[in-house]
Length: 112
Length: 112
Image 1 (spheres, chains in turn orange, purple):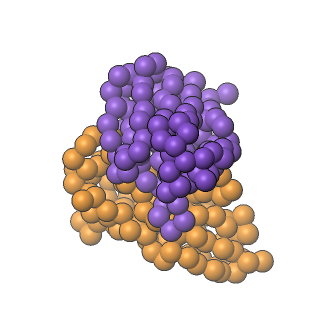
Image 2: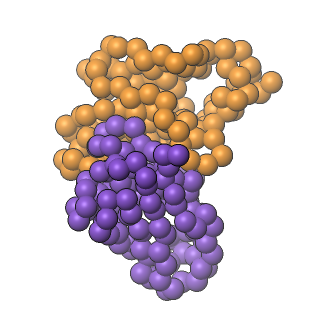
């Protein structure tokens, strides 16, 4: 069975801290791993990773994939209160071509 | 504006009363999918569709039906809703499988 596990489930930090969110997966026929940010409502896309060892970067956020060890990390440096959200990791793969599996999400709270 | 439109945003109903949640996208995307989100469980895929007239089960299809008669529309049907289907539902679309999803605004469903 395909599985995506995120850790920690919840994280509370102060503005300016750096955080690392983890996503490990067990998926047959891996195709891609995607990160999303969910604030009040619908998730919004952050990164898509398909190749090992290549860092994707957008401002203070960055992500990398390790296909050998089957995990990805999302780093946020110099956190701001606007980074408070649920961060979701999803994995495309599995025995059925259209299947998508999401992790439970990490709830990040950034205090001023 | 490119978007996924989901209706209604909120729905309260009673056990056994058939309901339909509509989903429409204007981006000519081939791939569409439905998810439910429950606290602590992340997003779980209900059904997905690779193209018109092609649908398949996700991880939690029991109690739901879908159809894809036109490329832009992918309604979710609950023929006999039960209280355990109380959840936040999202429709999403993408140009293909395993790439960035565009999400609708969500439907908060309560089944009494």
